Length: 390
Image 1: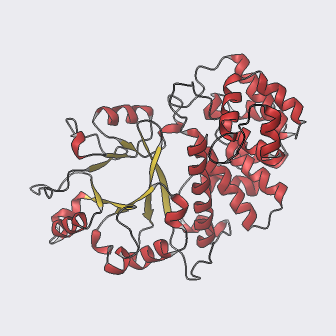
Image 2: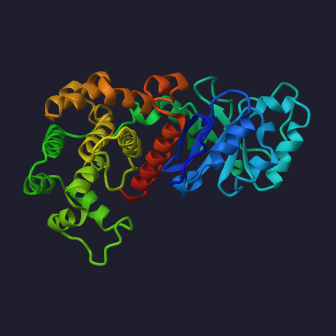
Image 3: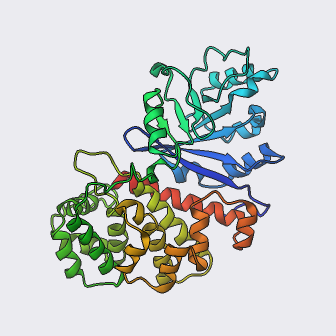
């Protein structure tokens, strides 16, 4: 990846957008508030690898005012990859309706976010809407599917998700996958839970591959996902892999551990929906690994950073207190401290990866904004690939 501009890089909050089938379809991007938004947009989209890193997903740019979309900015934003979620309130300003119509005619997709100003009508071409469920009740009535996909933001609970889906929204953005009412694993019996914890314990202490094979053979669903993975386009093998021995030989010990950590999140029923915790766990793992590498961490340290990020959602997956989970895993003390108390360097990185940190928080952690951006791109690129191949 090419070097970024040495000038202070803008902070960008990134949130995945999923459809009703639990598939990521886009990423929402919002820059920190402040002056010089056109310049900061140019820095973000002019930096190498953004749209390549998130392909095939599109970018939805959240804007309070389309005035920031100057010709130099638009030159960096291909209409087939970038859409705009614009605050509907700005339609009260002179010229905004005309400008949004022009953007629509240029091929950009637009979402009007929030209620229209009193006495103001939306341009006839702009029928796709967005709504922040965390800030206001859902609008009355059901949205017309013809003009979708409509976007529900701030979907932070199972109830938000159900209500917004009933209201006609098609795309959803928020922390709802972490709501215990939606998290996977609710129907697992005790023996299945014990097998998961046993397998995690084997992975964390670098057990012999034969021990891992034995546990895999006791878990048909996990076995299915592993063989499906190694036969996927991600590995492009010429001969079909049909045994665990072949799978382990193909992946290698280090990659086997990484994929098995993620496959624990892929325990949905064969005819069920994907588990949205899977790409979230992958993103956290990849971002902590990237931060560790930037900090000069050795390979083993980076592996533990990755593990910490992936394991940080196990309490949601297994519906168990994290303290009970780590007690069975025999993890290194600093990993345990990060998972239980967000302590130490790993814990600090994990707190940052769980939120949209302000610049002051990055400064306190001694992380440059450009390095943080790089870690975000690495993390989302990996999470997208995981979601497509598991």
